[in-house]
Image (cartoon, rainbow, N blue to C red; front, side):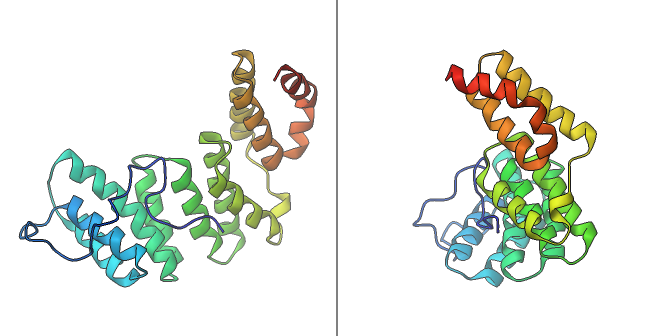
Length: 216
């Protein structure tokens, strides 16, 4: 399954290892930033219920600085990771969807795919695949997205799933633009993503892919 650790790149860096999940002398009026750091410290110690409560407390605070606003976005995605550890995938998906309204990094999309995969039914399998498509468009070599896509393919009916035409065409266009601009490594990464998502359509680009490889 995709990694459900909190605050993975390209999100902001995690707090330093000495941060504890208990208040300090300066926490008489805790901020979203301080609560998010304490929550992440609790998560890393395996205290998932405690981490969930602290992430929730950070999200419930009103106002704050720009740093606090960024911490709240982190807290939302990290609480989703926490909810997955607590075996509450429906709530985890809801948190992911809310965080994705603000920003859509590949790791968060992959986390949302994991939350979908852990819920039964064809609709959730299709939703997981859609998240993988978006994640690999954003970051074609994202390891977490590749892992959950592999899980999607192993599920009943998963091998038959293909991107919608608009999503596939957008991926192809980005691949070709990278190749035309001489960014061969990126072009090949997008070809690999296309091959994983829509293998039949990737066949049409085998010749140009071979030329790119020869140019390396």
